Amino acid sequence: MVEPGLIKAAQSGDRDALITLLREIETHVYRTAYYILNNEQDAMDASQEALIRIYTKIGSYEEKAQFKTWIQRIVTNICIDKFRRSKPTVSIDEHEMVFREKQNVEDEVLSAYALQDIRSAIDKLPEHHRTVVVLRYLQDFSYNEIADSLDLPLNTVKSYLFRARQQLQSLLHDYQKGGVRG
Image (cartoon, rainbow, N blue to C red; front, top):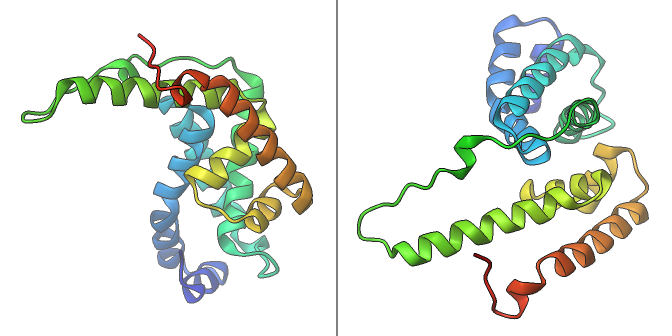
């Protein structure tokens, strides 16, 4: 994800290296925040807060953990705090559909409904299950990386993912039988 030399330069006080480092990770930070919070404005706020925290705490990063998991822990904790402080809101932008020429409109609509229902099902999961699902399936973290990021035992991560998959399977029952909503 990020070159170790860049991290070391940022830690030693090289301002340009630190700015370059923050630019390299900002998309990853935002994407994680958006997947967890499911709201663009909240994700932007959480991303900014995470980048500021990374900026101020880069000196405390130790190579015991991967840099990726250190960042993930910061972002996830900020998002969890933000989620606890506020009720989820729905962005109007999320419900706008744009159809492209030469594409099957019916497929676009069905795909949009499926994606919306999957996102809705993920949102209905308990916070700890939702977080591990986002990290595993949307951020492509390994089980060990999730355990490191969330400071959880590996078996707890596996258990949360197992239960989350069961809950998602139940919530998305109509799709498994070939049905669609609407």
